[in-house]
Length: 280
Length: 280
Image 1 (cartoon, each protein chain N blue to C red):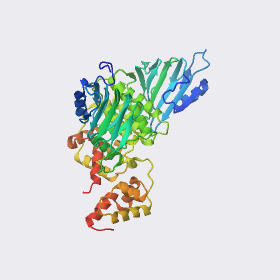
Image 2: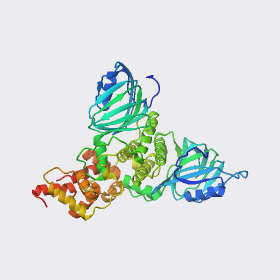
Image 3: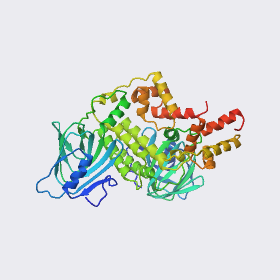
């Protein structure tokens, strides 16, 4: 496990056979985990990689030994995408399988105990709940009061979960590839797509808001959106900004623009900018 | 070439043929109708053409037994060709590029090309409509895209976005080859956005300067020089590229400087002067 290139190897956290070093590295990414190793185990064969973006992180872990890890309440949302080996997670009275076809989503506040075998290799998507709430709020137009809680059990043969898994593994492969520094704009684009796909693919306490038929935005809200784009032509336009000034959800904006202009808000922004630059 | 062996995107068949005219027809349906150039043994040509359309982006696999040569008229698409078997040559305008395994070629919309294949050849193709890509470019830069977007045929070897795209396309094709539509619309949307971003950032084109990460401010003398140049050439068409060349700063820098000092873009400034029918 030490020679072949592993996922996210460009972003190493630790390579070690020492349990304490491994534990110190784990603590840097996860909140104070507690390790239980069989008494006979003196050496591990651990590799931890982690790519932090602004609100989302992508991680890779392998420990090389059978291991039980107890995680206290985390303040972040964490979804695992096992790529080899197997294990199981106990969380909130639920038993979840961990293997390439099954994973788990840990929501903030939930405790869990993970037992994995020595061949276990995992890709992790780690997200700040506040950033997810902002994204969710932008997509739905609702204020997100209570924290997001995700359905923990993941079956990666389900089409939506499969699409998310593929997108995460793809992001891991692409971000690990170039031998030079990845420009911020590319990282931001991957981060945005990971958050949106995470929210759309997973079942959670706000899923219904993303599924229902969105209301139409009022004409004054569309105009306010137009004014905002016109006033800030050079800034990269996040959907959040547009929904904040219009006070209407991204799905409503999408529906209104589709009805009025036959295009999405993104295309709408492009057209607004283009028309603004043209002589009147 | 065995026509019945499993190929990428075989679940999205366009044609399975032994007739050259049918391959010609298949090209006409999804890209542009080529003229077949006379080669030594034009007769039977085993061909497989698979084509998967997401929404605005299409992924294709084309394989044929060759030898053959096509003359393509300008099409309404930008394409990225990734050869997986055999070799070929492309002549587009005055630029010749070689197609071989591990290399990649970019084709611009609106420009015809001649492609020559001495023998069996297979490639993967990413195709995006000129309109869609131009809208994405407008959205990213906020600039009006007057002059059509034109890709430079040569590929910058170390551009991270280009490397990521060359990994992304085969990976995506492998995923699609094992999947069945319909794909989740949010997955299609995010995937297409990233593909277009990588396409625009990874390749050199006539608007690359608008996407360059670090934008230095134009000095006042550079703005003045641009103004003088505009005044002296007010009767003729002036491009932003020309102004960038005269002043020695990027188009985007000039753009910002003009916005600050004149409250309009350089080209709007040209138009205003013209409307007044005078120089400065």
